[in-house]
Amino acid sequence: MTPEQLLLIDAVLTLPETSLDKECQRRITAINAVTAYCSVEEGVTFRRSRAGQPVPAVSAVKDEKPLRSEADIMLRRAISSVTKDKRPTICFACLGNPNLTVQERVVSFATPGCLTRHFMRKHVRRLGINEPGTSIPAE
Image 1 (cartoon, rainbow, N blue to C red):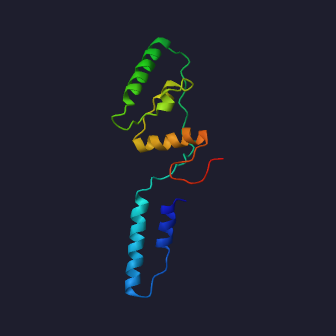
Image 2 (cartoon, rainbow, N blue to C red):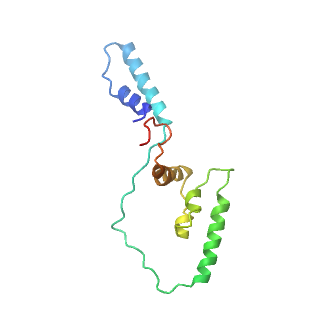
Image 3 (tube, rainbow, N blue to C red):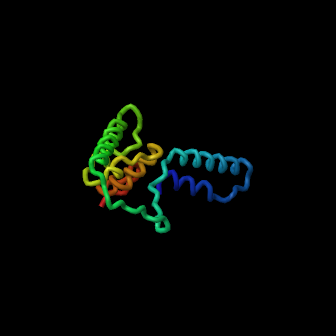
């Protein structure tokens, strides 16, 4: 747990005080703990399996030339969207991975925060590097 989480748990679960001044101070401490916790970005979420959703059927006949040009267009658009000007929503690590399909390479996340969670879950953890803000050494 992060220090902010521990502070929040301690402040919220503290028993009420006997005097009015001490009770006000306890409440102020709890409010400050909530405020400190609000700046903490949530950790990695776990995806639920989609066992109930049908898998789309794959067409037996493929027209390679139009798909290749569409793939090139999709890749060019994705590459041009990853800039330093604003936070991207396309993962540069996936985009540069030729082992993935084109659809997997150009996935656009809803927000930059969603991309950060994807990056931590798929790329950083595989390297064995801890998340920022944790003090537990990687093994």
